[in-house]
Image 1: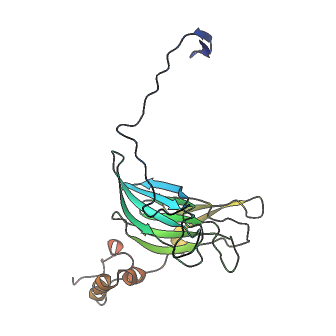
Image 2: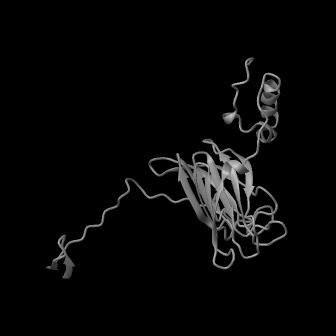
Length: 231
C-alpha cells in the first residue's frame, strides 16, 4: 500500500500495480574490446552517428605503452547487433589516454587524450581529429591543443562537436577549469588541388600508398575533381 499524487496533485492512497516494460525491441547486446587484455577502460568514451558506433578504450596498452589508449569502430544495426570494423591506434607517440572521450559528427571524429604530453608539458592534453568513413577506414587530420598549457589542464577530458565547431573541456585549467571552442576548419590541412596535370598521379598514389595519398590530396571520397577535364 502506497501513497501517491494524481495529475492535479491530490493525495491518493491505495494498492497499485506497477508494470515495468522493456522499451527496447529484441535482445540486449553487449560489446567488449576485440583485443581486451587486462584493464582497458573500454567504453570510457562512446558516440554514435549514422550507423557507426565509436568506443574509446583510454587505458589500453598499445605497442608496450601502458595507458596509451585506442579507439574502436563498429557498425551498429537497428536490431542492436554490431560488426567490428577497425581500430584507430595512437596518432603520435605523445598521445596518452587516447579515447577518454569521443564524438562523431557527420564523418568527423574527435578523440580526447587528456593526459597527453604537449610541448614537454605532461598532462596538458590534446584532441585528435579524424575523417571517418562508412567502412571504418579513417584519415588523421589534426591535433588540437590549448593555447595556454600546464600539467594540470586535462584538456580533452570531454569533447563535443557539431559541424565545424569543436567544444573541449579542460577542467584543470587555471584550477577552476575552462571550456574551449574551436573552428575545426582552421586546424585542418590544406590539400593539393586536383587538375589534369596530377589526377592520374593521384590515382596511382592512392592504390600504391593510401596513407600518403590521403595526406597529399585528402581521402578519395572527398576529392574535388571539378578542375579535372580529362579522366
